Amino acid sequence: MTTVGILGGGQLARMLALSGAPLGLRFLVMDTEPDACAGQFAPLLVGDYRDQRALAEFASKIDVATFDFENVPAESAQWLSERVPVFPNPRALAVIQDRLAEKTLFRETGIPVPQFVDVASREGLEDAVATISAPCILKTRRLGYDGKGQFRIKSEGRATIDAAWKALGAQAETVGLILEAFVPFERELSVVAVRGRDGEFRTWPLTENWHVDGVLSASLAPARVDDALAVTAFEYAQRLAESLDYVGVFALELFCRDGRLLANELAPRVHNSGHWSFEGAETSQFQNHLRAVLGRPLGATTMRGHACMLNWIGELPDADAVLRVAGAHWHDYGKSPRPGRKVGHATVRADSTTVLAQALRRVGEALGRQAQVAPVVEALAGA
Ligand code: ATP
Ligand code: MG
Ligand code: MG
Image 1: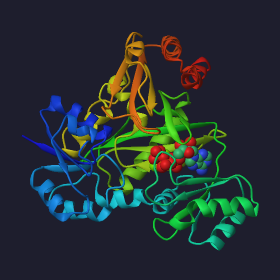
Image 2: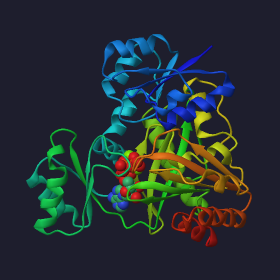
Image 3: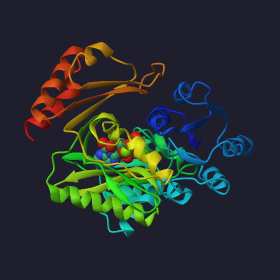
Image 4: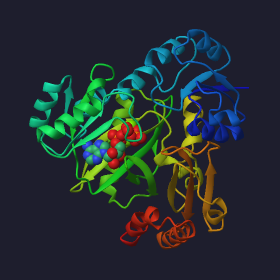
């Protein structure tokens, strides 16, 4: 019996546990919160990620460890890796946790990236804005997610710089800050990929993503891009995976502007933009992540037709209204509602783009959420 340990007990750990059940796997999830939603399906060890006693207990009960969130303290991941195999490796995690190290890696491996500058002080911010020019975005180097820890600088005036420093300046010394150019992208894309312990590399079809207020709202796969662009995106992902000796599933977020790709960030885990693979692919990102970290054969990442994932943020809409639509699938993460919280998603799958667009329109109308499906329906019409 193999037990997989997952640091972090959110919806990603929950979906990993659900996907690992058919493989006969056992799970142990560690989280700081006793009501972590993965705990509804897997034994939960409540403890601080920096507490060595809790980590030692975790390590003693598992055969391999992985993560459901990227902000696991890198030292804890390192400590754990001296006792039990940890995938992805702690060095990869450390690079990805720091936007400066991550973007430097993109640059060093020849992957185009928006202009960026490290910001250490208020004067440093003024210089950085002068270098990059507005519009630009000030971001925390570490610990940001769902667009948190970001401030958009729309103009170069003193008042805007004051406001940006007021919002994030205190974090310059704790988590660090980075200023990056704002990219007026035509679309956002992501590569969800998996690399096995033996170096075998596979990607799911390229996914197109729509964000609202910095949080993913909808994903469509396959993305409407020409093959050459997809090949370039896959090549970037493989280059990064190899340079980090990465094992498991990860996502590379990309901006597409004037037909060119610019890397935004990496996520060292299964990713929200790959949730559609649960029903839309031969093998889901969740099951392939488990296969990869266990050194088992990887499954095919081919699609079953076309799929769109809709995120439910804050609270769940009416499940049955969605389940009534052919090709629609429901995921309730078992979390209590809270503004801005990801509480579930739906995936709509169809054999053709026409049928997918029809099904999405029905979901939008049934829920009164036409605005959420509109950009996807529009994209499918132009596909
Ligand atoms: P995630 O939840 O994906 O980890 P995050 O907090 O790490 O989010 P980013 O991915 O950097 O943040 O930014 C969130 C979203 O904000 C992006 O998907 C994009 O829509 C927008 N955004 C971020 N950086 C830029 C940029 N430089 N130019 C234009 N839009 C941007
Ligand atoms: Mg991020
Ligand atoms: Mg992101």
